[in-house]
Image 1 (cartoon, one colour):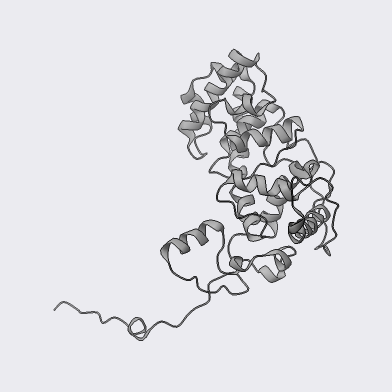
Image 2 (cartoon, one colour):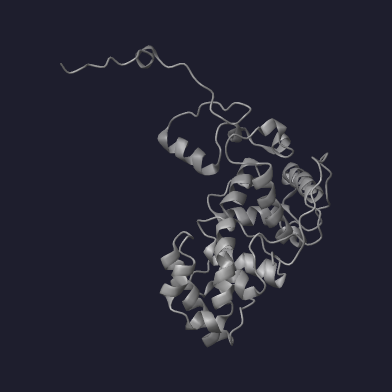
Length: 289
């Protein structure tokens, strides 16, 4: 079962219909342009992904299974996680069975997922703590979740939002990339980006926007070879730096190197620049006699 919902309803490229932003958190009046941009982005995402309940990309049937899946999703793809969870949940689909498992047996099941040795140990320890501290139930507080092995703020936010309906705005590397590209945040880490996004989007939209931005990034807004001018959001929202760099990490790397980036073509690839004369001359290959 994927998420708890049917397939996402998608429409054609929208005209940019906006939605109200009645309770974005703590935005000053001088940020009116930023709020207007966020409002337009929100409207486009709602138009593209209008299903009342959006499907969660990780397959699960309980809060515990969702927690396990999100823990495994770090540094790997949702597709890869969904490939291993059927067998994993058949064998260890509840806290009691996971807690009694040998970490090596769990690792054998999830071996194709990145960092499998560490993740398997954390899954077993997490389940044991659920039995010891929470009567075998997944805690419904950030404090309780983040006290579990292998559970950080992002993982806790996903579980709080998707399993318990608590307003949260989980930020992964993809959302970080798009928030920077669209000029919604210059945060250097996911915590700063999360705070910036919460300031410009309505509280009751956070959980949906988390999924909508992920879907949009995968289907319309890739990191590389992206036509910014043809993108329904980047065409009006992309910051100037986005035409030179594919991500905030790439920009920081270029800044530290002290080298100006080559301008990007409409397809997102760096334009070819003429080399200096010394570099243009082909190297002579000396053959040994």
